[in-house]
Length: 215
Image (cartoon, rainbow, N blue to C red; front, top):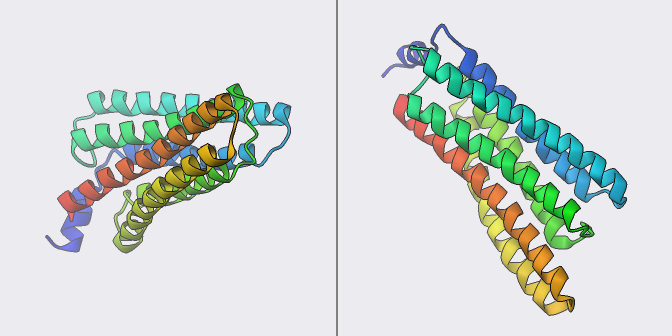
């Protein structure tokens, strides 16, 4: 299929899906930034205030996800397969959910986030949201397939790094922490944060599937 033909195929008159996906990806990225801000904040009260901001972004993304599903039922013309729209909306929503869950657990357990594992995980989650945002923004015109592909490769690498960080963090936790309650708390936080990177990879896989179908 020629590039011009491909471009026409992927550019329907109704662009509402692109706008919604881009807004969701932007808010997911903002949540990644806020999570990083939260784990860098030593004051409990200030961390709670950042958590409230993350929660607000998560609720806005829930609304956008609902709108995507509503538009899916309303529109005959869609930019790509209906099932892929559903998969991508769900994958992006999952990233937001697990970023929010990570921040909630840090706050609920009153864990000092100045912890190597938590800090590294927050960095990787933020990096993942940056790359997902790039890939999602590329869907509108599909002109930067190389940049999109590079973003998806980076997401895969980030997920692999998160697996390594999780394993090392658990090992260090059992070696250095004598308080069993703290072990349980931190282990749960590591797990939820690692799942957030898994969800970034899930979203990248959906985008890759869309590219393969339409390229």
